[in-house]
Image (tube, one colour):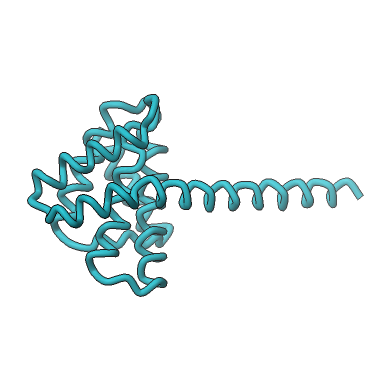
Length: 151
Protein backbone atom coordinates (compact mmCIF):
# COMPACT_ATOMS: atom_id res chain seq x y z
CA UNK A 1 0.00 0.00 0.00
CA UNK A 2 2.69 2.50 0.96
CA UNK A 3 4.61 1.75 -2.25
CA UNK A 4 1.51 2.83 -4.18
CA UNK A 5 1.26 6.01 -2.11
CA UNK A 6 4.90 6.81 -2.80
CA UNK A 7 4.39 6.20 -6.53
CA UNK A 8 1.44 8.56 -6.49
CA UNK A 9 3.38 11.24 -4.66
CA UNK A 10 6.11 10.93 -7.29
CA UNK A 11 3.46 11.40 -9.99
CA UNK A 12 2.35 14.60 -8.31
CA UNK A 13 5.93 15.83 -8.34
CA UNK A 14 6.28 15.07 -12.06
CA UNK A 15 3.01 16.83 -12.86
CA UNK A 16 4.16 19.78 -10.80
CA UNK A 17 0.96 19.81 -8.77
CA UNK A 18 1.79 21.92 -5.72
CA UNK A 19 0.76 20.37 -2.45
CA UNK A 20 1.33 22.97 0.20
CA UNK A 21 0.97 21.56 3.70
CA UNK A 22 0.55 24.51 6.08
CA UNK A 23 2.50 23.06 9.02
CA UNK A 24 3.72 19.91 10.74
CA UNK A 25 0.50 19.37 12.68
CA UNK A 26 -1.42 19.41 9.38
CA UNK A 27 1.05 16.86 8.00
CA UNK A 28 0.34 14.60 10.98
CA UNK A 29 -3.43 14.96 10.51
CA UNK A 30 -3.04 14.24 6.80
CA UNK A 31 -1.15 11.02 7.56
CA UNK A 32 -3.89 9.87 9.93
CA UNK A 33 -6.60 10.72 7.38
CA UNK A 34 -4.81 8.84 4.59
CA UNK A 35 -4.36 5.73 6.73
CA UNK A 36 -8.05 5.82 7.72
CA UNK A 37 -9.07 6.44 4.10
CA UNK A 38 -7.12 3.36 2.99
CA UNK A 39 -9.18 1.19 5.38
CA UNK A 40 -12.60 2.25 4.12
CA UNK A 41 -12.31 2.77 0.36
CA UNK A 42 -11.80 0.16 -2.33
CA UNK A 43 -10.72 2.81 -4.82
CA UNK A 44 -8.19 4.29 -2.42
CA UNK A 45 -5.49 5.49 -4.84
CA UNK A 46 -7.94 7.44 -7.02
CA UNK A 47 -9.56 8.88 -3.91
CA UNK A 48 -6.18 9.89 -2.55
CA UNK A 49 -5.42 11.59 -5.87
CA UNK A 50 -8.72 13.48 -5.65
CA UNK A 51 -8.19 14.43 -2.00
CA UNK A 52 -4.69 15.79 -2.52
CA UNK A 53 -5.82 17.80 -5.53
CA UNK A 54 -8.73 19.24 -3.53
CA UNK A 55 -6.30 20.05 -0.72
CA UNK A 56 -3.99 21.83 -3.18
CA UNK A 57 -6.92 23.75 -4.62
CA UNK A 58 -8.19 24.66 -1.14
CA UNK A 59 -4.87 26.16 -0.06
CA UNK A 60 -4.56 27.96 -3.39
CA UNK A 61 -8.02 29.51 -2.95
CA UNK A 62 -7.28 30.38 0.69
CA UNK A 63 -4.16 32.22 -0.44
CA UNK A 64 -6.08 34.02 -3.19
CA UNK A 65 -8.65 35.10 -0.60
CA UNK A 66 -5.79 36.29 1.63
CA UNK A 67 -6.86 34.16 4.57
CA UNK A 68 -4.62 34.17 7.60
CA UNK A 69 -2.54 31.13 8.60
CA UNK A 70 -5.39 29.66 10.67
CA UNK A 71 -7.81 30.06 7.74
CA UNK A 72 -5.41 28.31 5.35
CA UNK A 73 -4.97 25.53 7.86
CA UNK A 74 -8.74 25.06 8.20
CA UNK A 75 -9.16 24.94 4.41
CA UNK A 76 -6.39 22.36 4.10
CA UNK A 77 -7.76 20.18 6.91
CA UNK A 78 -11.32 20.34 5.57
CA UNK A 79 -10.09 19.14 2.18
CA UNK A 80 -8.01 16.34 3.70
CA UNK A 81 -10.86 15.00 5.84
CA UNK A 82 -13.75 15.56 3.44
CA UNK A 83 -13.78 12.13 1.75
CA UNK A 84 -12.14 9.85 4.32
CA UNK A 85 -15.32 7.74 4.37
CA UNK A 86 -16.31 8.41 0.73
CA UNK A 87 -17.82 4.99 0.04
CA UNK A 88 -20.02 5.06 3.13
CA UNK A 89 -23.42 6.60 3.62
CA UNK A 90 -23.30 10.15 5.04
CA UNK A 91 -19.57 10.30 4.41
CA UNK A 92 -19.48 14.07 4.95
CA UNK A 93 -20.85 13.76 8.49
CA UNK A 94 -18.55 10.86 9.35
CA UNK A 95 -15.59 12.80 7.97
CA UNK A 96 -16.52 15.84 10.05
CA UNK A 97 -16.83 13.77 13.24
CA UNK A 98 -13.56 11.97 12.53
CA UNK A 99 -11.80 15.29 11.83
CA UNK A 100 -13.05 16.77 15.10
CA UNK A 101 -11.79 13.72 17.02
CA UNK A 102 -8.34 13.91 15.40
CA UNK A 103 -8.05 17.67 15.87
CA UNK A 104 -8.91 17.32 19.55
CA UNK A 105 -6.25 14.62 19.92
CA UNK A 106 -3.72 16.98 18.24
CA UNK A 107 -4.61 19.72 20.76
CA UNK A 108 -6.16 22.12 18.27
CA UNK A 109 -7.94 25.06 19.87
CA UNK A 110 -11.71 24.56 20.17
CA UNK A 111 -12.22 27.61 17.92
CA UNK A 112 -10.36 25.88 15.08
CA UNK A 113 -12.33 22.67 15.59
CA UNK A 114 -15.62 24.59 15.58
CA UNK A 115 -14.68 26.56 12.45
CA UNK A 116 -13.55 23.39 10.70
CA UNK A 117 -16.84 21.71 11.51
CA UNK A 118 -18.81 24.64 10.12
CA UNK A 119 -16.61 24.99 7.03
CA UNK A 120 -16.15 21.35 6.18
CA UNK A 121 -19.46 20.73 4.44
CA UNK A 122 -19.42 24.15 2.78
CA UNK A 123 -15.94 23.61 1.40
CA UNK A 124 -16.80 20.10 0.24
CA UNK A 125 -19.80 21.38 -1.66
CA UNK A 126 -17.86 24.19 -3.31
CA UNK A 127 -14.91 21.99 -4.29
CA UNK A 128 -17.10 19.24 -5.67
CA UNK A 129 -19.16 21.75 -7.64
CA UNK A 130 -16.01 23.30 -9.04
CA UNK A 131 -14.65 19.89 -10.04
CA UNK A 132 -17.99 18.89 -11.57
CA UNK A 133 -18.03 22.12 -13.57
CA UNK A 134 -14.52 21.39 -14.84
CA UNK A 135 -15.52 17.85 -15.75
CA UNK A 136 -18.62 19.14 -17.58
CA UNK A 137 -16.47 21.67 -19.44
CA UNK A 138 -14.00 18.95 -20.48
CA UNK A 139 -16.88 16.73 -21.62
CA UNK A 140 -18.36 19.55 -23.70
CA UNK A 141 -14.96 20.41 -25.18
CA UNK A 142 -14.37 16.76 -26.10
CA UNK A 143 -17.85 16.53 -27.66
CA UNK A 144 -17.16 19.61 -29.79
CA UNK A 145 -13.81 18.18 -30.90
CA UNK A 146 -15.50 14.90 -31.86
CA UNK A 147 -18.18 16.75 -33.82
CA UNK A 148 -15.52 18.75 -35.64
CA UNK A 149 -13.71 15.56 -36.64
CA UNK A 150 -16.79 14.37 -38.53
CA UNK A 151 -16.56 17.26 -41.02
